[in-house]
Length: 190
Image 1 (spheres, rainbow, N blue to C red):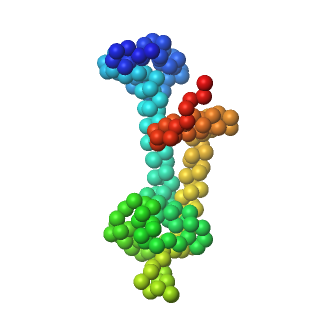
Image 2: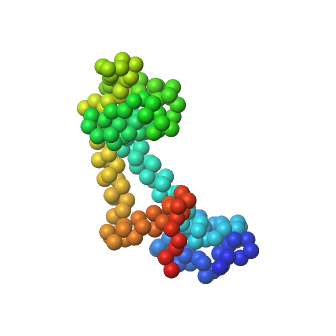
């Protein structure tokens, strides 16, 4: 139960925050530093801060994988959208811009960079010369796959502390949380 300021009482403190340094993580130490200095529920603070730190780690891991194969994030995201369309991985510039939520001018710049690197090609439609399709090259598909493989190894490694059952449970909990924040949560199970 929270007090008038939204702080959790001793009963709402997670077990690891009682001073057991063998099981403490950086978030436990963060909470201990702020205890009684700011109004917050320690359980909520622990969950949200851990999610933020895990998200930061995921971004760093993904960026290292991209750097290893010589891609920038925007290049990977564009190749990823094309690859999701199957083989040969084609889309119009306006379709890509809409999916990536960027302006047509921004999309043109991205495509110019990717084309110069040999990762995509622009193809004119024979029936309508005004239409241009963007297609992944073999090199583009290979670089995208290499990045995907490196990311998969890193992501799988992050989950090694969990059994398959734990992973299923964690996925279900996070799905329920995401559905709630996205606005279509199911009522809690009694």
